Amino acid sequence: MLFRQHFLKVRWGEKSIVALYLSILSGVVVALQYDPAEPFYSLSTIEVLAPFGSFWRALHYYTSQLFFLLSLCHLAAIIWDNKHGPIPRGRWVLLIMGLVTTLLLLFTGYVLRGDATGASAGVIAENILLAVPLVGRWLNELLFAVTTAAMKRVYANHLIGLGALWLVLSWDHFRRYRVRIWLHPYFVCTLLLVSALWPATMEPERLGMLHIAGPWFFLGLQELLRYVQPFWAGVLFPCTFIVSLCLLPEQGRIGRAAGGYAALWLLAYAVLSAVGFARGLAGSF
Image 1 (cartoon, rainbow, N blue to C red):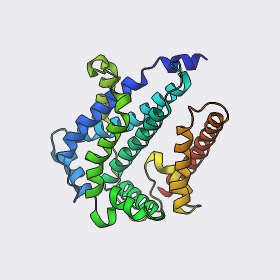
Image 2: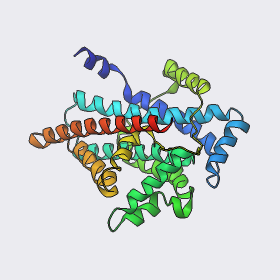
Image 3: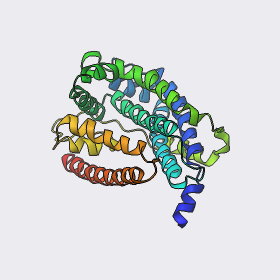
Image 4: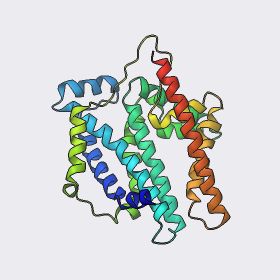
C-alpha cells in the first residue's frame, strides 16, 4: 500500500514529456549530421568531429529510452489509480497504439545506428514482417526495407512518419499536459550529467562473435524466435499482448481475463529476456 501511494504521487506523465522534449532537441542536432547512406561511419564521425557530438548522441540515446520507460510507468499509474473512472474505449485504444508507436520509434533508432546490434535488429524485423501473410511485403516496404533501401526508409519513418503517427494517436492525451522543463531542474540536470559522463553504446562487428543481442526490449522476442516460426513469435505473440492491453478497461470477465493474460505475458517475456541476456553474456566471451 505504501509503495502504491509513493508510485502514484510521482508525476510520470510530466517526466516522460520532459524526456521527450530533450530527446527531440538532441535528435534534431544528431539528425542534422547523420547520413543514412553511411550510418555507422556518420555516427562515429559525429562523436569525434562534431562539437559535443558524443554528448548530444548520448542525450538522445538515454532520453529516448527513458521516455518509453516513463510512459510505461504513466500507463501503469493510470491503470492502478483509475480515480477518474473508466477511460472511454476509443481513447484508451489510441493510448495503447501510441505506446506501440513509441516502441517502434525506439526500435528504429537502434536500427539506424548501423552497428552490430542495429544491423541484427533490422534484419530480424524485416524477416518477421515478410512472414506476415498477404501484407507482409507491403508492411516491410512501408516500415523498413533495409535490404532494398538501406537505412533511407527507416530514417524517414524515425524522423517523420512514426513521430507524426505518435502525435496523432496521443494528441488528445498529450495536449492535456502543460509541462515546462525548467520546473524539473534536478531531473534535467541528472539527464545532462549522465549524458556527459557515459557515452551511448556502439557495437562494431567483431570477428568470432557467436551471438549478437538485440536491444534490451527485443531480447525476449529474439529468444522466442529460436523456438517458434517468425509469424507466431514476432507477430501473433506481441499482438495478443497489445489486444489484452486494449481490453483492460472492459468491465467484468473480459477485463479480468485481459489483465490476467497481460500479467502472464509479461512474466513469460521477462523469463525469455533473462534467457536471451544470459545467452548474450555467454556469447560475448
